[in-house]
Amino acid sequence: MKELWIKIDKTVPKNAREGLLEIAANACDAVYVEENILDDAKKTGVKTASTSGDCTIQVLEFFDPAKIEEIKKAGKAVAVKVTVKGKEDEEKAVKAAGFSPDYIIVECLNWKIIPLENLIAKARGKSKLLAEVSSAEDAKTALETLELGVDGVVLKTSDPNELVKVAFMVKKQIPKIKLTPVKVVDVKRIGTGARVCIDTCDLMKKGEGILVGCQSACLFLVEAEVHENPFVQPRPFRVNAGPVSLYALCSLDKTRYLSELKAGEEILIVGRNGNTRLTNIGRVKIEWRPLILVEAEAEGKRFKTIVQNAETIRLVTEKGSIPVTELKAGDEVLAHISEGGRHFGTLVKEETVVEL
Image (tube, rainbow, N blue to C red; front, side, top):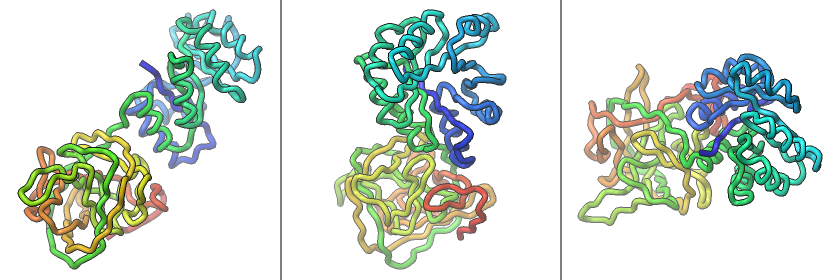
């Protein structure tokens, strides 16, 4: 099994760091940090790696055979970090592997493929070879180099969405998202508005759809058009999402207005069990339709969403789904509740925002 580490340095803003650590808790094998944020990294529950401090994996940023032996005797895992600028650095990494540290972390500054090919050939089986990368594109290259690929990647990024992409590449899945039952308290027909259908480049199943809502603090799971009925064929690629002003969760850490979405861009598909995957949008279709306002309560707060008034639009429940035309007070539907307050779709916890 390939490994995925996330490397977070002190320059990463606090909001981004918290988002990275939240994803790392479900997607990463280790979190590689400086000592000043080691305590935050430990809260993820995954292995921690650092050059100092009480971590799971001690990282040596220099080759010292005696130090490798000392750390191994103490019962701690050890990794040797080598920055490859030239042939002599590649040879140093091979030599380090001969002393069997648990990991060799290689950062290739200029030539990114040939040094990795050589190291995969010469060091394989002695230590786990990890490539330090800064993008999903570089991660893909490292994982496929010499067909066998490296044993894993250390992703250095401040972008949680980049971590999600690499997590999907390495682990073949994106971390789950928490869904909570919310109780419907009111359903009201309102006027006609510009409604958005999101047609994706994927096929969804029952219980899958897209998270949307009037408030960023609570997004309702609207099911794809997957059900048979006497009047129209199922369209399992489509979610009839709601009016143009709604928020939609497009990645694990970012919302966008439905009005902003375009063909080719990414959207997050979510299932009732919290499983998620990214797909691309194939088409965004806006039409004027009669609408319904749905209000629900959870955690002592009231949340809202708006959907088209039609039998084919359903909100997902724990065991099935309910057409919005049959929705009534007391029904429970699934939603994703988070902290509100966003600036261009990015959560800003310190900002005071009231959404009614």
